[in-house]
Structure formats: structure tokens, C-alpha cells
Image (cartoon, rainbow, N blue to C red):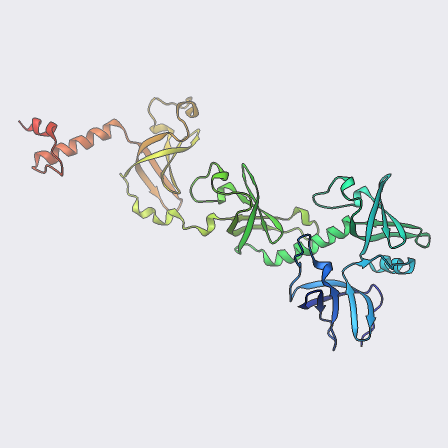
Length: 369
């Protein structure tokens, strides 16, 4: 059987998980094991599953059983063990006993170490008092005077864990992948969604093909959603700078695929959804807006402030002038009184031809006399 040195690093695969043990593949006749408690979160959930790649360190051997750990517990750690942990980079578990000048006192077994403020925590860093009394994992960054001067870092360990997680996610969360996530918070510009433990952004423009003005009317914190990754910028060396954007809109049917049902001359009663310097955008169908150019608006010139003359949500009668499906553009014009007079003229012509339509029009009948 291969011999392992204390603290020797080994990358392996989880092959089985029992009630209290995680078994790992060593490429030998026997398997190694790690205590399952090392992988349990605050809610008691196991953070690994069969097939996952993990990094472990050799602790001890009892006959054919090889014991590994993701961190060295300090109860029985003497200075020789801690020096070995320092040389190998093996994580150690210590208890934060007190806040002292410049940082924290950490007890690892019977040995006292120092953790600077800057090396405690990584993301969502808490107030100093919140760390006192906690058992936490550290990596020894300095070991001097035969273990009398030991400096440890929790931040470095958490950064390495975050880097490992991000590298794994970078292979999994790629552009075009459909994912499931949970809404964590809602902002005016979009929603932050947790996907496999990574915070992604759902921009307001990617929620729906229909214009969204108030996200809280559609999404709520804790809501489960399905979306498609439209942007993934991974920074392997700086995981906190990695950015992923998702879209719910990409999974919807595009309303413009049905734009062929709209014809030039069609009239709509729509609502103004956006006001620009060059005109008004009017929604005529769910997900489809058209533009009424400023030159077609009455009592308006190039000096008119359209936002003072028109209001978002105001209803407007419009007629389709031009359709450009490939560019997803529709040009509209206000349905003027002239057009209404044309409608009346067409109606009277029908009356003159003897076509009374479905209803009797007394005004038309009077004109016939």
C-alpha cells in the first residue's frame, strides 16, 4: 500500500456517502475516508455528493483504513504537527478565544496563534465580536520560534475555497445553459438570483418581452425561477469579479414572431410606455412597441418638451404606417380626426350602396332623403 506523509495533499473523488462517513477513491485496494461532519453546513446538509472532486490531506492510518481530512482538528495538535501543517498548507481548526489588539487570539489545541483583522472572514464579513467563541478553519501563514509565534488566516482559506468553487462553476454555467435559481434580492435595475451558490444578475430588461416597470409585481424574494445564461465573465484569479447575467425573457416566445398578423393601416388603442426626444413609444400588443415620430405629433415642434405634454401610461389612438420585422421596428402615426372622417365617409358609401351593415344608422337614412 502506498505510504502517505502527514499532511500530504491528495485530490480525489467521492465514491460513497454513509450516515457519518465520506469514502474517497485512492486508486488502491482500499478506500480512504473523511468524517462527514466536515462537509455539513449550518442546516446539517452535506455539501458534497458522489462523483465530486475534493482536495484532502492525510491524517492517519489504522490497518487498512486511511483517514483524510479537509482540515486538521487541533485537539491533539502539538508543535510538530502544526509545523507539518504549515509546511504542507494543511488547514487547521481552531477556536477564536478573544479579540485582542490588531486581531484575534486563536487556540489550536494547546497552542495559541494570532489572526489579524484583515485575515478574518472574506465575503459578508461580520463585526469582530461575532467571531469570538467560534470554531473556524485557518491556514498557518507564519510559524516561528518553534511554534511560539504562529500567525493564521481564515480569509486565505475562504478565498481558496471560493476560487475552487468558481472554477467548477465556470465549467458548468456557460452561455446558453438553462438554470434554476432563487431570487435573493430585488433592485430597481433587476434582481439578484442565487444559482448553485453563485449570485447572478437578472436585468429588468430580461425579465419579460413585455415592458416591466415594477419588478416587485412579478418577482419576490425566495421565488424559484428558470432562466437562460446570456453572459458569463469568469475571473479565475479574482473570483469576486466574476459576473453572470441570466434572462427569463429568452425562454419566452418572442412576440415579434407573430408580427405578421399586424398590417399597415391597422389601428390600435395603445398606451405610451416611453417618451424620447424624437417621439413616443406606444405599446400596441404585449411585447410589441411602435414609435410615433415627433414630426407626426400635432402642436409640437423641435423645442417642445414631450414629457411635459404626454405622460407614461396615457392612452393613444394610433395607426400602423410601416413595419420592419427584421429590425423589430414599427412606425406609427396618431389616429387623427381626418382619419375618423374617412371612416365616416366609407360608412356612408356603404349606406348609399344599399349595405346597411348590421345596425340601422338614422343619420345615414336621413341623408338619403
